[in-house]
Image (cartoon, rainbow, N blue to C red; front, side, top):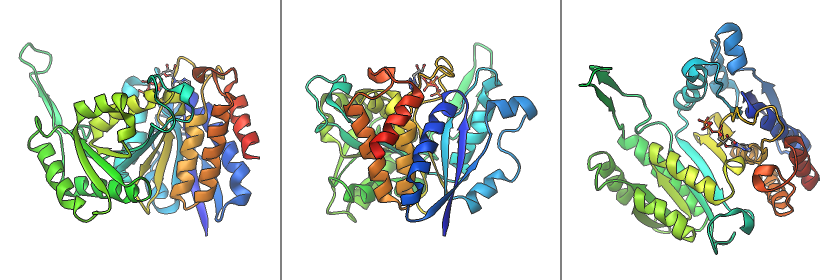
Length: 349
Ligand code: ATP
C-alpha cells in the first residue's frame, strides 16, 4: 500500500509555502506507516497563460481514482481574467470530488498572537466545519435586465437534506474526539425555509449523539461570541457562506491568515488540503510569506491519511516555532519563508 499525493503549488506565494510544506513531508516520510508518493502538477496561472489549460483532460478522474490526497498552495493571478483557472481548478475539485467538509481549526498557539484582550491559549481552540458543496456558492441564479436600472440579480441558497445532514453528522463525530460540544450556527430567523431545514436536521441528528452537547447560535450572535467568549466553542458547524466569513474571523483571533490551515474533505476519498490564504500577489516572490498555514495543512492531510502521530509531530513543531518566535514578519518574527520552514524542520528533528 502506498499513498499517492498530488502536489499543486499553484500561483504566487502558493509556490513558496508549498515548497516548505513538501520539505516537512519529505523529512517525515521515513517515519510514516505507509509510504507516500508525491506527484507534482503545474496547474495554475503560468500554465493557463502558456496553453489555456486549467484542469487538464482526465486529471479529475486521475485524482479521484488514483490519489489519496491533494496538497494545494493557492490560486490567483491578476493576469488571468476573472480568475477562471482558479474557478475551474479549485472550485471544480471541491464540487466534483464532493469535498463536503471544509475543516478549519481555530487554535491559538501563543497568547501574544490574539488581538482579544485577556484571552489565552486555553480560551481559543475550536474546530469549524463549513459546508463546502451547497448554499449560496453553488452558482445557481441569474440576471434579468442586466445593466439597466431595472436589473434583477439572484443567487439561490441551495440546501439539501442530504447535504445538511452529512455535514452535521461529521460535526458530531468530530466532537466525540474533542470536548464533546457542537454549536450549529445559521440564520433560521430570517432564512426560514433554507435554515429551517438546518434546524430540524440538527435537532433530529442530535438525538443520535446524546453524549455530545448540542447548542445553537444565530450567525450574528456567533460572530459576536467568537470575539467576546471564544472559550464557548468546541466544534462549530455552519453553512458555506457563514463558514467562509466566520473562519476569516477565526483566523484573525489566532494570528492571521498566514497561520490558518484547512482541509476540503470527503471522508474515505481523495481530499484536498490547503492554507486558508490566497496567492497574495503583493508579497509573492519576496520570501515574506508565512509557510506555517501550508505546513499545518500538511499535518491535516497526514491525519486524513491515517498518519496521526506524524500529524501531531508537525503540529507540535509549529507550536514550538511560534512560541519561540522563529517565524515570519506577519507574526512579529524576522525570518524569511525558507528560514521559517527550516525552523520547523529543526523543531521536528
Ligand atoms: P483570495 O481571494 O484568494 O483569498 P486575497 O488577495 O483576498 O486572496 P490573500 O491572497 O490571502 O487574500 O492575501 C491577503 C493579504 O494577507 C495579503 O495581501 C498578504 O499581505 C497577507 N497574507 C496572506 N497570506 C499570507 C502569508 N502566508 N504570509 C504573510 N502574509 C500573508
